[in-house]
Length: 69
Image (cartoon, rainbow, N blue to C red; front, side, top):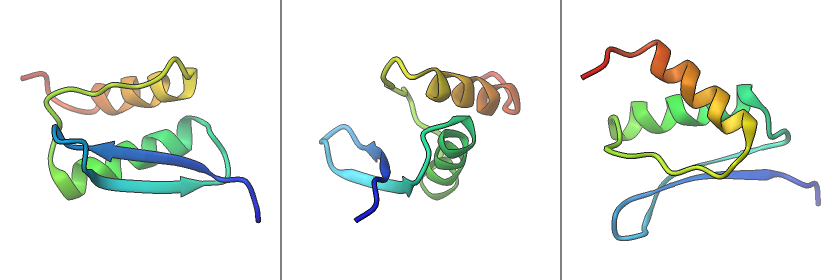
């Protein structure tokens, strides 16, 4: 066993709709997950993340590339 970080997207019922395992917890991994989840499931209504700086940086980068509704 190697240590991996789990990125997981859940729906309103708490069911997993997408996930990604990565060796590193950095902006690149978080951004890849956000883009993968959005591509497969469409844009979310809300995003809840922990206080990880990499998650926030990746989410800001994804949002910068998208049009504001």
